[in-house]
Image 1 (cartoon, helix red, strand yellow):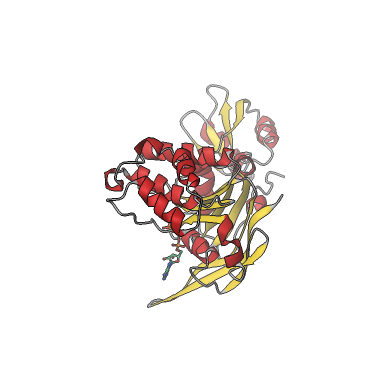
Image 2: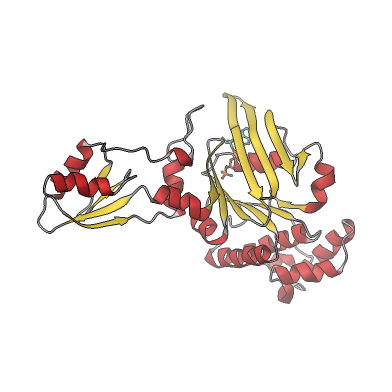
Length: 323
Ligand SMILES: Nc1ncnc2c1ncn2[C@@H]1O[C@H](COP(=O)(O)OP(=O)(O)OP(=O)(O)O)[C@@H](O)[C@H]1O
């Protein structure tokens, strides 16, 4: 895999009135060429700090970063032309049209004028390009911001919370835009805490919690690694659910009892459930994996912030029980 972005052991602390706050605590991330990569984490987990550090807007306390194989911030001037980023919401003149705005930016950046039409088309603003920006919805302004970042035909586009503040319609438009960009072969890194969106838009994901990576990989892999662990168990009618759950709990299973079934959370080997219950002459009528979505994985991984030096990586999940 060709990595367009690599971050290793990134550290950043902020000094405040209450002492030193560690925003990034040895954070790692790799984004491969052509990926639409979701950068997910709860509020305050370090996403913006990572992106701002990468763009040379703040100085890290340690770690290494590279864009297109070149170390940054040292080689940022050499790679800047291949990078489009929206980390702070850009301000536009309300009295300018989208076309005026982009033409001005194109001129200032030495970009061919034909690019203005191309990016207007790409972000779906061509039909509204002659209207003043102040008449635009928030979603349209966001798309104009993306258009401005696309003018110089970047290989990597970085967007910090592009769906922030958008209504469902705006989010849908943004999703279509991201898909179109991905189809055009661009690599996109997209930070968000809107999990459903990341699951729909992105093919890869890095999950950050308290300044550390807690999961990374293709969305399918991250889900599969975490989904396999939970199974739903139904018993033959009339069997005492609570009693059966207690038998499994005594063997170390994490069991949550519902009205007509129970869920075993750490079922690395589901066959153990049938075996343990059959030994007590309790028979299972249904044993099915609980489908995880990114939201449940995210909550599971970030719900308890990692302890310094002891953050759990995704591949450490699922130690055996019931032996
Ligand atoms: N300029 C600053 N001075 C002091 N602390 C800061 C500063 N910027 C960020 N922090 C702190 O660093 C931590 C990480 O913040 P950051 O903004 O990177 O998180 P985030 O994941 O982008 O959050 P959000 O989703 O809320 O934007 C937080 O605890 C935040 O309060």
